[in-house]
Length: 442
Ligand code: NAD
Image (cartoon, rainbow, N blue to C red; front, side, top):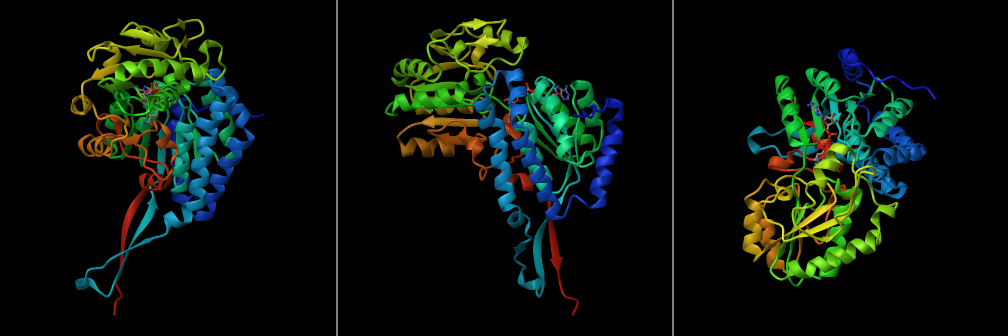
């Protein structure tokens, strides 16, 4: 198997110039060519699924089933949905012409942007590199993909395999960390799509400003779960636990903490402990379906948070294995360190609040979350949360899964990001809506 070496930082201007030449040649634009590229990506994911599963196991201890479900299969769904609808999405959309200008026709045409840079993080290192790639290619662009250096096996596997399926003058993988990303950000791109933390998001946006390049920032933050008394707490706990402990809590839309209203706080403790046992058994360390923390730095950061409340379940950890047990903490103070920043690990604090007003105030005093979840039987509560809070997404009764619904926009607001993608929203992100007017000369 040949391995195309990753370009050194010094080669980056040449590489970007090559991708721009490809775009300028016009060959990325015809619908048939776009569909061919998407078909090649489909073959990559199906033929090389095992190689990716092995890489994801090495990087994050992801089981083969979880790697398939949340990374490979997820991207295939996005791909299939895009292929099924692309022609319709690209069709020029007729627009009304005011009487004063008639006779004339007007329409909106989707112009590809040019060369797109996708910068991906480590937590879903395949999905978060390739799902944006699907949209960028479908919209007719050339693309540089910069995988995360913190998921080195997945990064190397993408760098090795993508050029075997996709023309390297149309899609290039640049591996590396800060020096390589900094070198990339010096180049002029036509769109930069960044997923990761807000500190680097600011660096990306500042670099993009120099070239007036539009950005999508898919960031994170603390996504709350509101639980009201009266909700079925067994179902509630099961669904919260499933969303929280997936990928050992290293999911951008994972429930970060629970805002338990009134008496639901005490009742939820036992239910969450049961749900964790049901999901991962009495010894989650021995459950092959339970993942590991990505590196020692994140392990140490998380281990320091385990004392921030009364341990309801979990609390165990093993640095050598980078294992942290699925942990639920009760009696957590809103000022505790675990409540100050996104947890991004398998620790779930329960914060008790007296009523819905207090829950809404708690949410609105903090950064706008990437997702807000609520478990309630009350339509009035649903309406109030919809109207009185702002978040990237709002889901009643089902954490995390909205991101696997390709007709929904996926993205944040405020500190949780800007812009959105998936399905047709990716076409909007990676193309320009060009106004076209056509008035007859006679
Ligand atoms: P990370 O450390 O892998 O960084 C993301 C990317 O930024 C990497 O490709 C990295 O090389 C690059 N980078 C790092 N430092 C840089 C610098 N100084 N200059 C330029 N580029 C640099 O990932 P992370 O930030 O730890 O990811 C976790 C965060 O991402 C969490 O906050 C999580 O919520 C968020 N996230 C958001 C989404 C989403 O879709 N909204 C998805 C996953 C993760």
